[in-house]
Amino acid sequence: MASNPMHLNDRKLFGPVTPVLGRIGNLETRLARTKAEVRQAQKVRYKVFYEELGAIANRRTKLRKRDKDRFDRYCDHLLVIERIANKENIIGTYRLLQDKRARLCGGFYTQSEFNISPMIQENRNQKFLELGRSCILKEHRSKRAIELMWQGLWAYVLDNQFDILFGCASFQGTGIEHHKASFSWLAQHAKLADHENCSALSKTGIDLQSFSSDANDDPRRVLAGLPPLLKGYLRVGAKVGSHAVIDHQFKTIDVLVALKVADIAPRYLTHYGKDASRFAA
Image (tube, rainbow, N blue to C red):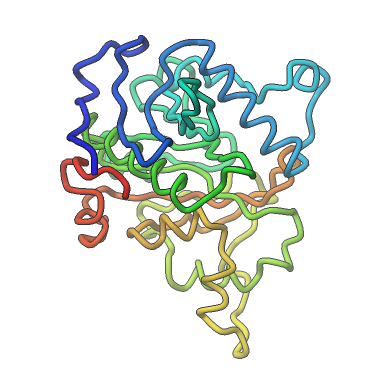
């Protein structure tokens, strides 16, 4: 176990003193310190989303081999880094957009698919953080790397005192029928309260309640089949919106996920430490 992490407020927003937020073995997690590191994170995203998972790239994206959009410049980029012989290799990343910066770029990425106004209005005095573009290179995708990313995110959330985390979680593929048992379970057991619900913007949005549960569906099997990221958020207390949206570019079906920090299950606070002082082990 490592010593306590330096507080994020002790460093400049973008620079060489960005603190390490977690460490295990030769892996560590922290925010990107330079524009070059952001570009490397975009290359990791390209390898995962386009080369591995088959997202559709336009000509410019293919040429530069980076997953990049207009939101990147306003975000913090959480990195998972592998250290080998004094060399740092970025193997994973998570994009973090604070509400105050979202106002500078015209809103959140999630708003391209979902109407988040009810959630924002109902919690107008709360601080929001949008999470997106989470990925780890396939050859490095391990429980340790994933847990380390969660550790870094938790430290970031605590240091900036966010109240609500949200973003899109994706089911691979665009075949609705393949996920009907999952959609039915989410509608019954994990739906946001009506007064905070975030429905799909498009009329082609898929109402999760339109899928009826099958008596032969084993709840444990349904849960096991959920996307790992979504399953992780549900375990700590997250809820989902009432609809799913097909993302044809990334060849996924997205659901909106929202997590109130105050609702995080106590056992997970104990695991990482209420002050994020416990590094992943």
